[in-house]
Image (cartoon, rainbow, N blue to C red; front, side, top):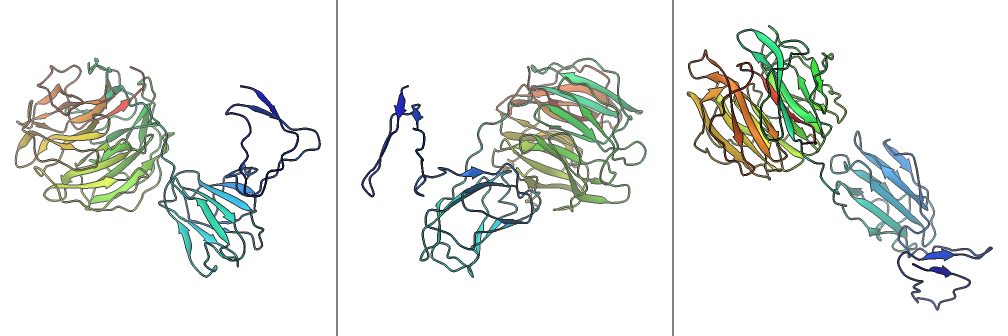
Length: 445
């Protein structure tokens, strides 16, 4: 790398000038000024430190703005007068323009040759809009309006935790699972003993147990640290219910959905932030039901599947990486309830076991685009009321449950390879029980 001293440059009009090589240092003499002629993308842009979260913005030429539309659309009013070469840059700060768009008001000036009576909107998540004023005829012209891809994927969870359930009596004990799929002995329970709850990973390396039944539905939660330590009860948010499902989405968030509130099935959901904060109820999408299962797929999305609403169902509902639940998708495979699901292979999922016309051990694989496959012949003991979680970065484990005699509680497990192959029964460790929940935690093996 060398130092390049700039004294005076007077190129002919339209001539490109290249100074030095990548990494060179430029020394500008006292009194000299570098001026942007409007053709250098981002040159001289003054980036604003305040994140724009409001519904409106009056933009000032020469500025760059971070636009966060997580909660609402944003109408951006451009300057009422402009000179050729004036530049503005707008960036989708939270990758939410696909949900809440930005609207450009060109404020009396043309935009790509059209008057400001035309509607100009941008609605692609991850988009950057870089515009330069060209003059009165064409007005503002985008020189960049592409979507920027997500950079990197957080490491997957390596360990898992089974927790709570019923032995005939409600319990709050837990069992940790190592990154090699070995289940540990019982850990004394923390929090209110209950069953028919749900659990999911959040914050990349932690977990959350929430909702369930103590005799009647509850909405309390218990957070799990990245070392597998379960915290005491935290007051719940949202409608108390049991027999719901949960999954992670968006790489570091979670969603609880559906269930039974004590009088009827519901389809509402509750989003969980990457710090474990549970949001209030979101009006449900899809058929209200309970005793379903959910898992992640496609690295950052989720799927709810199967369940019961007076009869067994095999429908699914996909969840986007922003936590938006899609409408019903016609089901594939045996209609059933009280099954379990988990992610595997880094970007796929598996539904398994449960009760249809009888107890079963069939599984249904989920592709990385959310397509559910037909039944795979079951492996292991048929059962219902079990739980499942991912572990080891790309594998899954089914564990515990109720045997087909409807009275024997089980502690057996079945490991799932990173290609979705279910192994035969592994002799259980820990207290036999059913109606429990499981989730992944820790990115350290």
